[in-house]
Image (cartoon, rainbow, N blue to C red; front, side, top):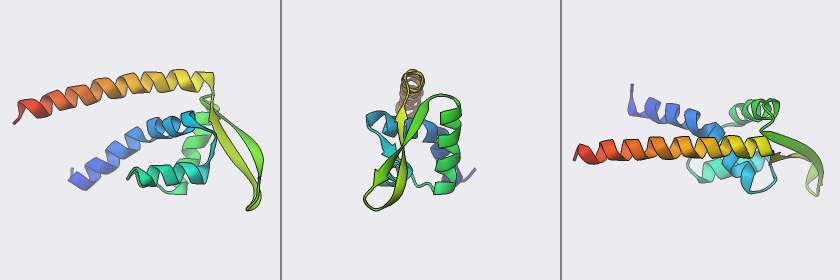
Length: 110
C-alpha cells in the first residue's frame, strides 16, 4: 500500500467521526461541513459527504431542518441527536485508544 493510499484509507475511516464532531458544535449545512473538513486538511467532495449524511440520518445520529437563506433557496441544516452524541462519545473513546496505541508503537521504534 502506498503512503497516499494509506492516507486516503485513514481519512475514509475517520470521516464519520469528523462529520459528527463538526455537527455537534452547531447547526450546519453541507457546504459548511465540507469547508470545515477542507480547512482541517481532510479533503472530500460533495459526493462523499451527502451519502454519509443520509446514513447518519437513517441511523438517527443527526436530524435536519430547512431554513431560509439570504443567498438563494432554503438550506438543509443538520444537528446532532442525543443518540448521535452517544455514538460520538463512543467514537472519541475509540479514537483516543487507537491514537494512544499508535503513539506507543511509534515511541518504541525510535
